[in-house]
Image (tube, rainbow, N blue to C red; front, side, top):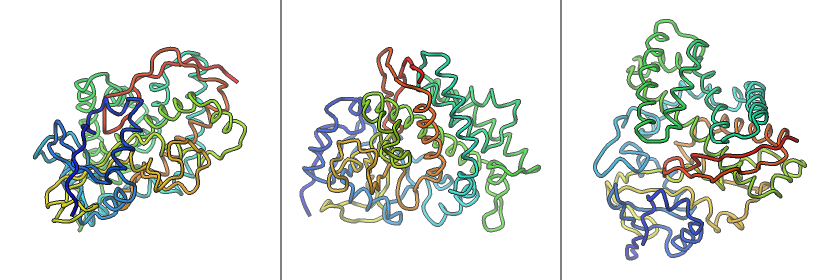
Amino acid sequence: MTTSTTTAVDLTDPDLWARPDTPALVAELREQAAVHRTDTADDGPVWSVLSYRHCAQVLRDAALYSSEQGSLLGAGVGNVPVGSGRMMALTDPPRHRELRAPANPFFGPGPVRAAAGGITGLAAAIVDRAVELGEVDLVDAVSALPLSVMCDLLDVPEKDREMVERVCDVAFLGRTPEERRAGHQQLIPYLLHQVMLRRTDPRDDLISKMATYRVGGKLLPVEDVVLNLDNIVVGGVQTVRHTAAMGLHTLAQHPELWRQLQQGEVGMESAVDELLRWTSVGLHTLRTATRDTELDGRAIRRGDRVAVWVWSGNRDPEAFEAPEEIRLDRSPNKHLALGLGAHYCIGAPLAKAELGALFTAMLERVAVIEPTGPVTHNRSIINFGLDHFPVRLTPR
């Protein structure tokens, strides 16, 4: 086995990912070794996986690299998340498959195709409103689509939608951790109330299916249903919001790409995949080794935490030709932005449909996206994106 290499920088520092020299820095680390030891400020020593091949190896092997002790950095040394063994994100097969089963029918390609018209209409209305205003913060504007789609999936009553969207706005867009926490503290009781209502009076919606689903003849505990619904809402809204805002920021910085799409030189499906790869807003995912093993010559011990840096894997030249170029027609494009293996994003087809609808609506209605103020990155290594993207939209 090779000697352990410790990164000279803390990859868990959120300020790192907004720096212009980050691509070169990460590329240099990846060239030195596919797997490094990183001494993090909050989580102690962590194995950082930087190459595409080794990222994929870890993500595919849920038996060896478990999610149950946490799927994201930031919990602190020795802290196990509350939902361990109870949430989709924090379970391994076969339990993971059992928890996904009631939600799968809502996120498959068929249901998403059936909902495509409604998603397209929502995206068009959102962009029309933004164009009408002229000057908007695109981060706030694009968030309206995944929030509306999620309310549809949950069948949130019309009388509650304004409140739910407002609470989610605070939970996801709050300017401080305290504001975001307060939003979640309002969202969780609402979900709990709806789960109890629909357990006795079920409908054909996601809450009802989760609330009445049985494993081994027994209903899932109410707390587990709420935890999984909250996880679905967070994942569904955050991934689309950050990828949409970062993707539009990328297109605004590269007018030639905007022109390619407007002129139909590139298909939207491949463009969405490339923008998912390029932005990689879910910077990392965490696993814990279930036994002693070896990864790229590194001795990984049982209980060691292994951080898969998706952003780095998605820019590995061994997996992608000219990875620092944005090629909207890139094919094949086996990026890791939506995961791999058992934990491949359950909402991937829906997320791609929402992103495609948003980008299409912008291209059809907007000639130029002109920044009107500084772009502000958020301070997160969970969903790395933008807090503010103030722009002026010039209509076509």
